[in-house]
Length: 245
Ligand SMILES: C[S@@+](CC[C@H](N)C(=O)[O-])C[C@H]1O[C@@H](n2cnc3c(N)ncnc32)[C@H](O)[C@@H]1O
Image (cartoon, rainbow, N blue to C red; front, side, top):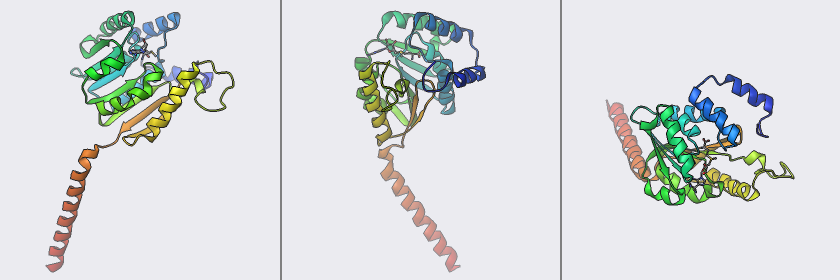
């Protein structure tokens, strides 16, 4: 359990989650036994709700691990949708492919093995949703590239943005999480909340999930302004015609 939401509330939320799936449950058990850094089912359900709500057809994930969060995301895709997910640990990527196959999602998932710093230049957008859950010190360096890969109206979802509460000054005098990563996340939080292309809200679920929507394309603004002026002029002309009748 995390430190942010009290254990009783987390247990209550877990009890409400009825999206039972034997493959997900098995991976979650393995994750606990092996101490893998996987999301829990509540964050998984949030990812699936978000992807479903925007009708996502193309999703990019940074940080596959063994495919747990990827199954939550890919489960929201239509049959012709695609999840592209990146992992640099070859053994984890191999297990992720197996898990996607067990979940019946292999056709909808492409696991890219390699360092995201290199691989991110090799994918092309637009994506409807990007889930960022890889190395915390890469959150900020990747940000502008991820925003560029996102379609206007698409979502950038980031995990661990509260870092066990330790990003908040004064929360604890004895941090238990990596302090340098905590600083990197704090910088990232500032960036996504001030980013001109994003509108961001943070949900303090588990370790904190930031949800940012990419604002409308600035390239379209001059065209939309022209359209608005033309519509206004037409309305005025119509009004003047009516007034003359
Ligand atoms: C927190 S885990 C991802 C957990 C997964 N999203 C889930 O909840 O099921 C982060 C993963 O990112 C991978 N990773 C770390 N740095 C990376 C990098 N530079 N390129 C690609 N993957 C990286 C790690 O090997 C690890 O498996």
